Amino acid sequence: MRVRVATTALGITAVLPAVPACSTDTTGTQPDTTASARSGKPADAAQQAAPLSSAALETRLLDQSDLGSGYLRKLERPAQHDDVTVLGCPALSELGGDAATGSTLTFPHKAKTTFTYGASSSEVSEELYSDSANKLSDGVGRIFDAMTGCPTYQVVAGGTPIDMASQKLPTPHGLGDEQWSQILTFSTGGRSTVVKQTTIRAGNVLVIVSGSPALVDRHLGKALAKATAAS
Image (cartoon, rainbow, N blue to C red):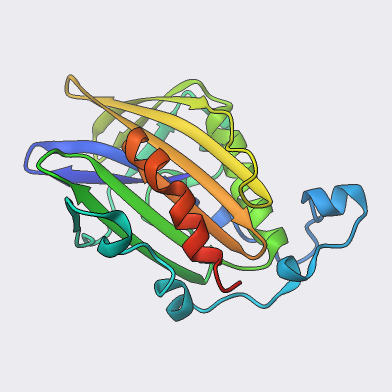
């Protein structure tokens, strides 16, 4: 899975996950590995619907009125292009040199927003993507399996080592068609950052909420509801 290395005046402080280009290319003759394909049952109408445009996804992102008081939208920084090496996780390393850098998944239809909360450093990010249900399922599932298959590993970004630990979490029941959830702990320079990431696929829409665990739990349901309200 791609990760975005966030930098400040204090140096590298956090790493946030996203899927690399090589993981989401499901064109050609790759087999359909989604649950509907394995069961031999056709996908439902929502799964077969045409992908939503990026402009349409933008309107379905959470905004400050959805979140409540104390939230401030954060401007996105330019993508970093540090040399990145993954150590101690062969499955993740095999995804290629770009598997540990970048800021978004490579599905063509996407939208993203990030908010800070209060005076603390807590953040919550929402990403929306739209593609065929098969492509969303296959791209995210393979990367999630690679990351959670390595309890600990290390990323060296721009010469800075980051110790990483991943833990698969129980997925929320009754939300969407497929769910993935994990806790990621990133440690560097004597500091640690804990990020929760929960991903829900509902038909041809993918909702990813990541950041402070408490904020992810608080806003996941409303993010999914808004993202799929007109689907």
